[in-house]
Every structure is written in structure tokens, then in C-alpha cells.
Image (tube, helix red, strand yellow):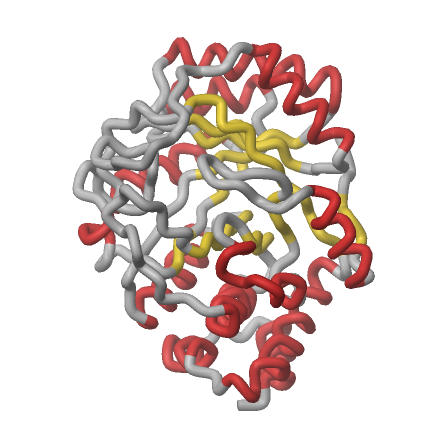
Length: 325
């Protein structure tokens, strides 16, 4: 496959077939650099060499009634994690101040659980209003299944983006969780879109799915028209049903990132959880397909030092995109 030519066609509006998309994941390792060069051609067309930085504040940990197989915070998890109720506003604001000084463009307020109570939404709203006034950060909220009136409140407070991942394909969903449906997730994304908030939805790769499942994920997010697509690589946590799962390697992870760029050419593709563990020393190459990363820690797992991330971007010749509002 001539990936440079395919990249030109994608830039000019071509939508790959599922067979062509599958060939990205099946690309021989010796042709990986050619594939990444094609992905970078698309990425450069839409984003130049700019990289968006994101930071998570885990405002509520554990106590989740859902049974998601990958998650250390679920009701069926035996992982020894720190559990706490919603953090106070001062702590959330302190995290925003840190994000501002790290040149983070998007500050992500995340809470475990099936969905937020109205009290929790009001708490987030109060924090967001002050963050906007003090720091002008772009805010992404990730609070679970949302009701229309809750989405409207978040929008009015200044929440720019809402994250609710599809996580896997429709066909594989029942193998990952049975406490909510795939349609529940789609419904929340559509509620967010109707409220005027930018939809963020992504995946977790490496959960015993097939290559066809991964292709389907990429096309599902294209159909949903998600503005931001976080691509997580499973960091299997002891005590969860997916404990011991180890299906990924750095070369395959790079092919996955290239797939999402070719299928969703103009969207923000973010290398998210598990990048340190699964991409290892090849992390820098991921940014030739993706244009966004998390800095700092994730929900219940550690990231790498923010200074290391900034040095990586500097060495690559990339520019941090940190336009505040």
C-alpha cells in the first residue's frame, strides 16, 4: 500500500473502506515508518506541529456500581485503590492552577460512578465558573451517564467538552460490561451534542477484542462525529477481570493510532491511558499520528513526569498549543 498516496486521498475527502482500514492494522512492521509518514501528512495538514496538552483531576475515586472489566474503580474490582468522595472546590481549583502553569490547554474534571447526582453537577458547575474566571482553561468534564438538564447546566457554566467513551465496539461491549448498554453511551454523547458541548469519545484497545472490533470503533466515532478521540491502551490492573491481559506491543499501538488518524483525519486524536506502559520508548513516534496527549497521572495509574513530556515535545520539534480563553 502506498500510504503517502492514501494520505493525499484522505485529505481530499476519501473515506477508507473497512478492508483498507484493516490493512493499516495488518501493515507489516517493516513498513511502519511509511504508514506513520502518511498519518503525519494528514496530521500536519490539519494541525501542523502543534500538540494539545490535557490533564486529569480525578475528583471522585471508587464507589462505582458499574462492572466494567478494565476499571479498578468498579464494584467488582479487587484492586487496592484510594477511594474518596467528591473533592472540595479548593482542591479542584488548585489542580487548575497547576494545569495553567504546565501550559495545559484542557483541564479534565473526572468523577467515578454511573452518573452524577444533581448535587455533584452543581459542585462541578461552581468550580468551573471560578476556573474560567481565574485561568481561562478549556474544561472537559467526565462524570458518566448524563441527563439533558445536567448537560445544559454544565454548558451554561462554561464546560467546553464532555468525555464519554464508547470504549469498545458494539459487538464486544457485552464482554466488557453488562451494567449498562452500548446505547446508554451513545445516548449520553448525543445529549452532550444537543446541549452544545463538544463531544469527546474514545476507546480502550487491548481488551481481547479483534482487529475488526478496532476498525469498527474508529468508524463508530467517525459516525458520532466526536471532536476529540482519546485512544487508551489497556494497562491491565491486578484485581480487575482483565488482570494479566497483555495483547499489545509498541508497533501495534502505533498502527492503531495511524488507523484513527486515517479514519478521523480532522479530529483531535489523543494518546491517553497506558501510553507509557504500551508504547514504551516508541512514545514519541505516536505523535506523528496523534496531536494530543495527557500530562501527569491518570485515574488510578501514574503517568510520566510532566517535565519528561515537555522535553519529549521539544526534542521532536513540536509546539505546545496552549491558547487560553
